[in-house]
Amino acid sequence: MKRILALLSIFGILYSCSKEKEVVKYPYQMTFDAIKPVSEMRFFIGGTEFDPKYHEQTVQGFLDRLYSEKTNTGYTSYWSKFVEHDPDWFADSYFTVEDEDIIKYSALSEISDVSRVGETTVLTFSATNKVSDDPIVKSDLFKYDIDINSNGTYNIQFVVHNQERALEVSRLYYKLVRYDESGNRKQLSFGTISNEFNESFIKTLTERDTLAIKEYRLIYSIK
Image (cartoon, rainbow, N blue to C red):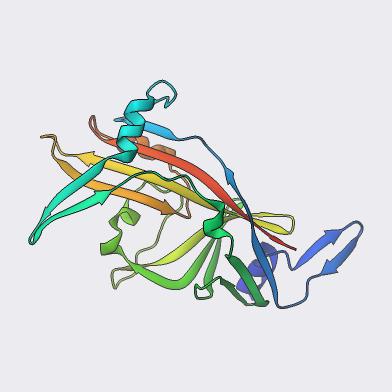
């Protein structure tokens, strides 16, 4: 019952229309509208934040850099070029509310858990990824914790903000490069995730560590 009530609240099954309450009939969809930037690109070296406007070449060089790592079979290259979010990438995405306890996101499996953190909601899906394929999920980079399962997987999560007849899904671009005391690169992580930046993570950056982040929200609404 608690989960049902949480889903009802999050997805606005009941919403106000003037002085009356209007009921949305099942099934219904919340479809993609737009991308809303939350921040400009932020750039850190060690614990110091630099303004990209005055360090444009340094920031762009970091975002576009090509990396190579030696493996047992040769070298693997990582092209880490930053690409601005294109609304067309999400144009066909949607939330489907089939009934009061079954909600799905596009091709993903249904939501298996709902938790509230202040005014924010974390939707957990039954679909999983391997931690070994994306070890950054174990770090403190993200504001909302990602639980690790006993079999070495983690469930896909969406961090959302509920608006009137709409949802705003948090999305974070990140690129983190960390070094050991000898200046050798020990970690390279970059990508996007439905989460938000944990400001306290800045304190963990050592002198050579470099970090870039940019935050967005994806807007979905009932038409």
